[in-house]
Image 1 (tube, rainbow, N blue to C red):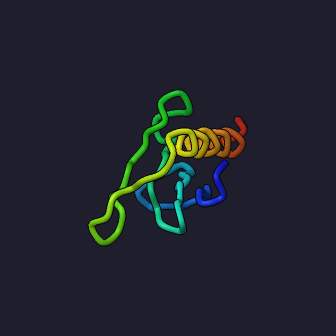
Image 2: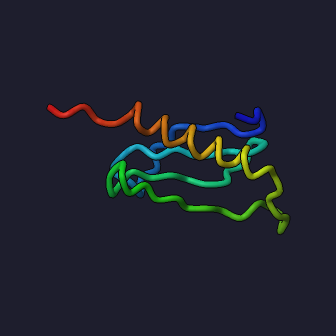
Length: 80
């Protein structure tokens, strides 16, 4: 994964389950939620600061999305 992208665990109070944030150059690009299950992940995409636009390679962003999904799979709750 491009080192400008990072994946961070988030405990956003709007969600019951764990969410992850995809960051690019330390700015949040998207939040991925597993509220509706791991087979129905939802992504919320945020605009960049200061009216700029996001510009990065497609495959780098795709790698970040896949890394975020893998992170959520590892963090999934273990049935009791």
